[in-house]
Image (cartoon, rainbow, N blue to C red; front, side):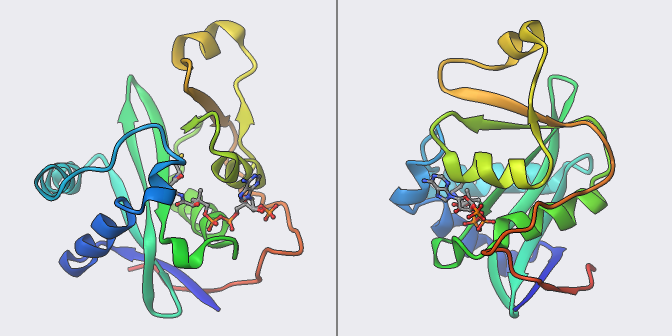
Length: 172
Ligand SMILES: CC(C)(COP(=O)(O)OP(=O)(O)OC[C@H]1O[C@@H](n2cnc3c(N)ncnc32)[C@H](O)[C@@H]1OP(=O)(O)O)[C@@H](O)C(=O)NCCC(=O)NCCS
């Protein structure tokens, strides 16, 4: 299996739209999917913002999702969304670890719905930790979300039986 990150192309957006409409995926995140108009407006805005870093995840030549970073409340955050057809094969872990070689801001944060065990596991495998400072955590976590942080630049991926040794396609 070959996994790569590339620039987002216009033809990727209908696929991203479908990914964020999948009810099983939406149940994992603590917000509602966007309708077509809101989705188009949101993606036009984030793609136009040069401070964002946004990549399409490609597996064996097919679009499998996206991974991105943005700044909110002076914190650099990452996010990702993978098509359900690719879940459980290490795609998010591989994509995020590759992305963290491009997005080198540290510390870098991830806000995750507390019940999103798969995403928490992805972050754990990529070296993210729960915030230790009670004060900082309470400022950025709420009833539904927790905030994790990756403090240092070295990208370590915890290997396990499900993690495939991807071949990396070059980014462009
Ligand atoms: C969360 C998501 C990115 C995971 O993608 P993925 O490609 O399946 O992730 P990976 O295969 O790299 O790793 C998933 C890990 O979670 C584990 N996992 C999956 N479901 C789980 C569950 N219900 N409880 C505990 N662990 C779970 C898997 O076993 C795997 O861990 P392992 O390698 O130690 O076995 C994907 O499901 C997704 O896009 N969901 C919808 C959007 C979303 O949640 N985005 C993240 C917002 S913070």
